Length: 167
Image (cartoon, rainbow, N blue to C red; front, side, top):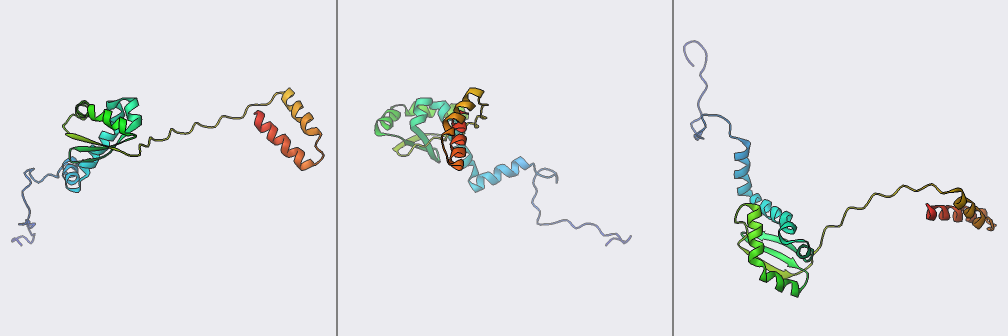
């Protein structure tokens, strides 16, 4: 305590100098160092490669091959058949060049193709069409067709099915 009864804040002697004059570190620098130590950078790079694959190789090749894993700078890809694996081995250098150009870095230095399951994402289901209104002629036809049925519940069921089929 100083003579006026006010104590001075103690300085932490264990504090390392960050070189930024006591200001907080930007979140981006903390995240980038954390990503590297957790191996997230590698997963992000793998995700980017998978995302741009179809654009780099074209539709016909992307239907028959999918990147599976990026380990270091080696990309492992599943291919639908041996003939396609053979064809892709001939195009390997060109594919690597396109991927690296698109990524803006030399992320892929080799590609290993193996025959395996190639699944493509299923397209989103189209929303169901609203039923159309039946014409008077269609309703008359349904009534006449079901009119010969004696059982009331069966008659109602047949009418409902016929209306649904026409709509």
